[in-house]
Structures are given as C-alpha cells and as structure tokens.
Length: 333
Ligand SMILES: [Zn+2]
Image 1 (cartoon, rainbow, N blue to C red):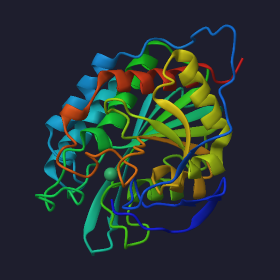
Image 2 (cartoon, rainbow, N blue to C red; image 1 turned 90 degrees about the horizontal axis):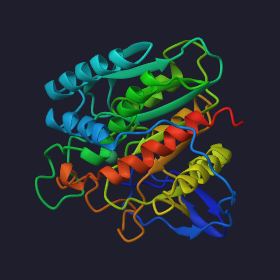
Image 3 (spheres, helix red, strand yellow; image 1 turned 120 degrees about the vertical axis):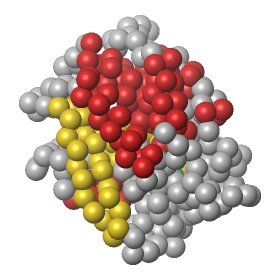
C-alpha cells in the first residue's frame, strides 16, 4: 500500500505519522520506549504447544490457491477451504457476506469469516487477520499490475490463527475466543481515504452478532518472515497499551524477546484502526517493522517476492505461542 498521512501524533517528541493500510512510502520514526519488561523470578507457561509445522502448512495451503484477490476464483476456493477447516475445530462459524462498491466503482463480494470458541461466555478475546491478498505489486519494479501471492501479507496471520483453532479445539481456555478473518483489507490506494480494510470497516459497523464485544483484540499482519521484528505501533498504544504491555511481556517470558521489540513506531491504518475506532474494542496490531527499509515494512512487502520463501517457522512459532499464552493467561490469575 502506498502511504498517506492522515493525521499526526506527537510521539515522544517525534512526529509519528499515521500511515495508510499496512504501509507507507515514508519512513516511520522509531525510538526505544521507556517501557521495560517486568522481571519475574519464575514463569510457568500456561498454554498448550503451538505447532509451527502445522501453521506453516496452513500458510502454504492458502498460497497454493494463488493470489486470493477479492472476487477471484482462488479467493472463493480458499474461503471455502478455511470455512471447512474452522468448522472442524470451532464451536461456531459465521460467514458474513456483503457487497461493497469500491472507490473505482467495482462491486466487491466481501466475505468475513468469524469462528468462535465457547460463544456463550461473556469474557471474550478477539484474534484477527486479513485473508485477502493484494491485486497488484505496486512496490515491485516489475509486473506491478499483477496480483501478489501474499504469503506473509495475508496468509501468515491466517495460518497462525488456523493453528490456534486446532489447538483450542483440543484444550479450551477459560475465556471465549473469536477468530475473525477479514476480507478486502489490501485493495486500497492511499490517495483514496478508507479504501483499505473494507472487511473490517464493515464488520466494525455490523458485527456478526449484534452488540458483540470483546475484552480486547489482537490483529496479526505480516507475522511469518525470517527474523521479523514487531514494534509498538501508535494506534495500538493509544487504544490498548495494557494489551501491548501484557503481550510483549509474555513474549519475552517465553523467550521471544528477539522478535517483540520495545521500539515505538508511527500509527498505521490497518484493520485494528477501525476495530478500535468503530467497534470500540481495544485492539493492537502485531505487524512486521523493518527499521532499514524506507517504507518501515519488509523488503518483500507488496512485491512478488512475498512468497513461501520468506516464511519462517520460527517466526510463526514465536507469534502463535505468544498468542496462546495471552489467551491462557486471561483472566490474569
Ligand atoms: Zn498489504
């Protein structure tokens, strides 16, 4: 996605830019925060094991359908497969379908998929990711008009959530969990306001269950690349700092401190932006941050290099195990 500054925040004396979608053409500013992980003498892992081989398979399977561009045949087939997998593991699966007219006049058949564990429990956690992939490769030097495979940008987050579904099917946590796969996140152009994140905008205005809420949410976006770094992103800080604090602390206690960095970066308009703003569920974004690239995102972002070669099981494990630990530590005992 191309970046557009929508508004700005003062961020520890630095101007933090609010960037469109999962990206920007402008470098994000970053700074080590004052926040340090709490040292604890003993840490006992509460969560069952997250299987990275299984998560990798779920990523590979999605990519095997080809680019999952909204309205395409590959998109439909991948959606059908995900619903089948989720029905096998979850207590309830709801498909939310709607027609949205995009900025270019195109009618989009948008399909959000919501899979729930213990739907009657009042205390709930929302875990989400986008499942569509981008219809063009605007950051590439060639074939810019062709769709990308989106192994990292799309499939990685969903792969982690499908593996979490498999694990929660074997061991129920004390809270309800909703996995929401948002459609049509990556069709936007930065010059058109609100043209990204169409599925999450729709869901935030029209939740799958009227009056739905959750205690907090975690969005995954680009969580599968080798040596990924995740930073504290400004929209997440403003809306859900305790969730960031808890998630990063558990990641460090599990030994994944080399992925979960105490850096701070400018705000991003990703699905969590609308979940926070419209649905009012405090939600953080775990998203790959690259301090070296000019976009602030990994070099393969929105290029044809975003294929299975960038996916690393160690990163999937770090993110997936951390999320499971968050789920099994809630409510915090
Ligand atoms: Zn993207």
